[in-house]
Image (tube, rainbow, N blue to C red; front, side):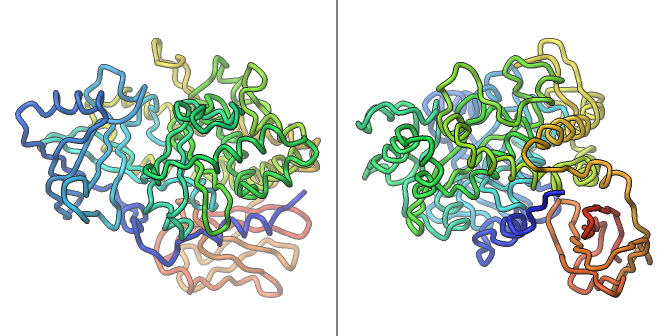
Length: 504
């Protein structure tokens, strides 16, 4: 089995901004937050509708849990998630739009997304957590109960804003240009004039300076460098190590409402500390194959790992790199790493069940949601069919998609030197005792020495790692919180063992 421990450890343990605190409580606490929106305008809904058209905020008092923030700015957001008959719209909140310096947990803005086209309510949360805990650039996500003028409006995901607070937290830099690849950021070469790109991308920082030369230079190098020199050349302009993992993640989740498919929903930030762009994922609510580009569920679960949409030439960042064998192998290596150690039902099933149990009561109480309670329950495991559903009637099940997608990717990776341990993870079990455990836990059933172990919490975050040599005992003193954890063990012969245990 081909392993990439070094790359995986790098991604997990070099999350930028660990010493800073912005949003750590809001996004890190294992709770569903209560968000109360109070409008004092007599016709606030009309004002919100007008504000959506004109892209302007209106005033709203906001309370998050016990934090009261008067006169925040709020507006509707979204495209397809907005253009539906339900009053359950998505919102963007700017805490300091009208009150200078007002923040919540160090955050200036948050996005409240309405879980449109997702009976499971899990797609956005699952993929963003997957990215974040592996150091792949993207926003954080949590759940909120939203109330409008005292009325329960439903369960929402709250998603971190990609702004200067985000940039400073992740990269310790906020001086560079931040571009959003919308409305159609396909990265095709349109010539050397910056004005040719104004209608395809949005400059989100340094708007007054309005200097697009860094973006134009990057697009020029991408499109006009010889294929043989392309990966090395691009590495001077883009953080390629992280980008390959980003690309692989979107392939694994068949997230086609992205550069991979529709050609937008991303940011690139020119980090002045390294003089390179950072690629940042955005708007992943259609993950798990829910944006199907005309494919059936079976086709999207079996999608080629080197997928590019028709017609040819529309996604140069992917298409041109795939013409270089070394770059193609690097994508395969990233896929191999993620699918062996992270992307599988055996890795994520505990998280799926834990999240579903946590949100179930609030989903059931959500009278404005887009699907039934039974659709919610069914979609956790299986494809749900809803006739007339926007974008296609069939929505892949969370667990069934993970299993089928992983098996397909595993079979495709064989040609690139990667063996995926499907049966090893599924069938090999260990005896752990005592279970529940307190200070230590004993592993019984191993027939090999020098095994590597990793312990994860139910969010998928690695809590502890080490080597199990002559002693079968693992100390749990470094794990501060009680709860359920997952032990994953790698043996020198290539077997992977997984077990759950409770720490008390």
